[in-house]
Structure formats: C-alpha cells, structure tokens
Image 1: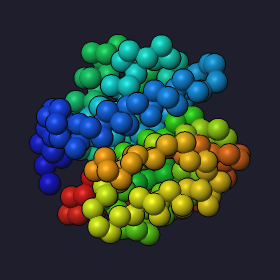
Image 2 (image 1 turned 90 degrees about the horizontal axis):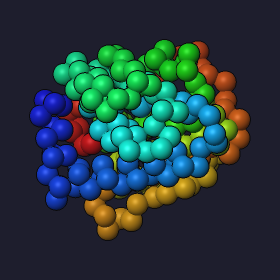
Image 3 (image 1 turned 180 degrees about the vertical axis):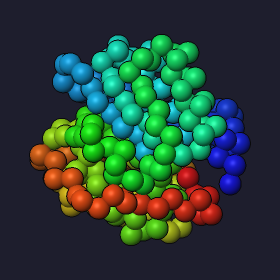
Length: 212
C-alpha cells in the first residue's frame, strides 16, 4: 500500500476522507476548547501527514499551548507532517519516525490531554483494537480525550469500540451519525490513568486490510 498516495483522497472535498477529516478536526478543536489553561500535551498514533492535528491547530487560539508527538512509520508522510508543521509555525509539534504500535514512543510524555487514534482501528485485528483502547486508558490523563476513527463497512465495529471505551472508564463526548458514512468518536477519561504496562507492543498495523 502506498500510504503517501492514499492521502490524496483528502484533497477531494467531496470524498469520505475529506468529510471525515473535517469531523475529526472539529472534535479536536472542541477538545482544545475544553482543555484547562496552560500547556496541552498530545500524541498521534499512525499520524500520517498530520492533517488532522495540524489542520485543527492552524487557526486555533490554543495553538501555542500544544506540545504534540506525531508517530508515523512512513518516511515520506513523516516528512510531509514535519514540513506542514513548520509552514504553520507550530513549533510544539515533533514528528517521530517509528512504529506507532510500540508503547516506547509514548511513555516519556504520557499521560497526555489528547490522544489521536485516527486511521488506526480500520487496520487492526479486533483484538488489537481492544488492546489499543486499553492502552488509551494508560496514555490519557484524567479528563483527557481520545479521538478515534473507524470505517462503517460491515461488520461495523464502531458501536462496539464505543462500548469498549465506556467499559474502561471513558465518557462518550461525540460519536458520528452512521449516515455520515464514516465513524468518528471522542471519549474522555473519567478517572486517573492506569499504570503503563511493561509490554511494549500495543498493536500491529495490518496494511493489507486497507480499511482506514
């Protein structure tokens, strides 16, 4: 799968990807609006070109408060994210080129105010989706928000994922309408984060599913 070429779908304003991106950015902006005053820490798993967070921050009044780590394995997408952050003047964004499924990339910054798992769950086994939900309860601070996406093709796992978050102490803040043609969710952690686990592997990306 050419993940750089895949991002071209975002440039078509009528595409599902473009509409999903707009929904994600809106949810991110709302989470930033609700964040307490002061620094805002964020991480993005499988960040791609960083269009979600960078786009949301570009004109947001909290943009200079945000310190974010974007983890992306594809070097071309990581380079685009770095360039986009520079062009937007977002000095607080750091791009790490590495496997986003490894906890080692997050331990030194967690817990954070915002976790992005966008374009992730459609490329994981169901068991790894659940493991990632559980990891989010360790990566989020109390009151922190997870923003996530998943396609709604059968079998539609979106309601199940929402239930998994709720069962692990998250409050549902937003869930897109099924009629939208995509799944976007936001869940806020209602208790202190759990201790980070010793195991390093959270998930294994399965690109052949091609199901962002």
